[in-house]
Length: 322
Ligand code: ADP
Image 1 (cartoon, rainbow, N blue to C red):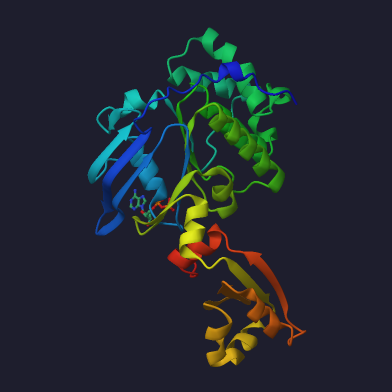
Image 2 (cartoon, rainbow, N blue to C red):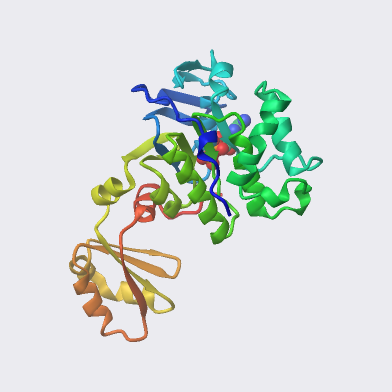
């Protein structure tokens, strides 16, 4: 696979003003406040993650920032333009990868790119000149004339990403870009997103995958019920909110082991929680838990460093959100 021709990614303008600034944004549907006083700013050339359980208000926030949903209150500045007032102008410099691939099944891969380019007022010649770069970026050179139904899920996702780059945007909105993809396909998308960041592009990413956020995001906000509950770099959030070590105890006997600890639980770890058949022990000093587990040969366990998922669960709880 050839490296895409980087000259076709123009360098994003280096300016002090954030690429996107949101202040006190709110939106209600009926009585429900789905976005409730949200503020954040994304410096140019960085990747910002918006994390939250289902229904937290992420997509509504993205749609308001794009001028597709009218805010109830608050202000949005997108690439120097007030939104929704001047959203059309701002969107000329924005790319969008929606949650669901919405590529046209009646067209080929190339035709999808050419048709999309027309929305940005590109001439046929300009669009055709850009196609080889986009196909290369998406690793779809051999699929140029393929029908959409013949593409794998990963290929469709990459085509959606390539299409979002048709206008060489400064800022790309990515709504769960790797949901439903296998690990190989996810890694390829991550590599491409890193390439965009290296070229100075700004990314706004929503994801359910904490490893994805940890890899890609410079800063992120965890939101729930439309409110921001934590913000920082992945590393800062882990350091500030979670004990550094976790011992996970699995399997049939894990719950009984936890119950059996009684008052001693507080001596073994700062926090012990059960979720399904797993017991999570959060601690600064794992030796105590490990020593106790040494007396229970029937239990399976794993010691690992705390990660962003632990922070996410701490703030948003372990109950299912459908
Ligand atoms: P997320 O992207 O974090 O899963 P959403 O922004 O899609 O969350 O949705 C937040 C809440 O707003 C959900 O409870 C959803 O049902 C509700 N919602 C979203 N769009 C509408 C709409 N057009 N009308 C009524 N409720 C909506």
